[in-house]
Length: 99
Image (tube, rainbow, N blue to C red):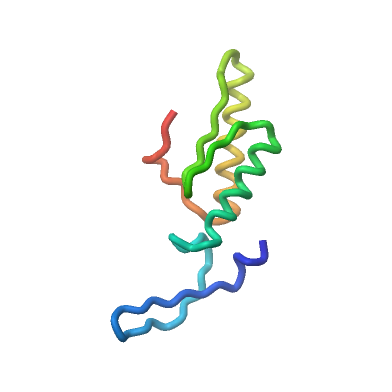
């Protein structure tokens, strides 16, 4: 996605403006472009047969586990999420994850 390249940010506090800094990874919190990145993740998971729910920057992937092959399938979804996060240099907040 070309809109994630060559991005900069500045911060203003009162009358003071920081120098421009190049963004090397991730998405600024509250940005308009952030949700587009998560739609990309949802499409990736759906293409691979997983049920996905999104809310802001939260992703829920679920699957009814009936047999051992379902466990392997669910692990595949988690591996996809981890790979996607690594590609975009985003950290997964493990403390917020649950089963």
